[in-house]
Length: 74
Image (cartoon, rainbow, N blue to C red; front, side, top):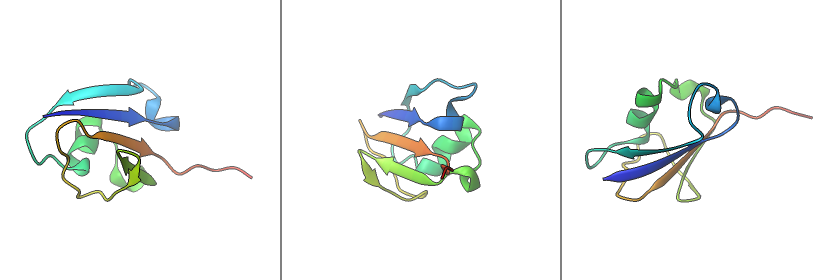
């Protein structure tokens, strides 16, 4: 299955902003993080197709996973 992964803010350092992966069926968000060498504790928000999701959610063909770190500011 093909999944598009969009990275935001600090997750873009040393990585492509948008990546397409050809993955086995039932791959989870957590497995994508392992592929990208991102610690799940560093992630604040997971969006799948624009909707909030969880780390253990299984992806399906043509999903778009967006990954955001905590954002600071004031």
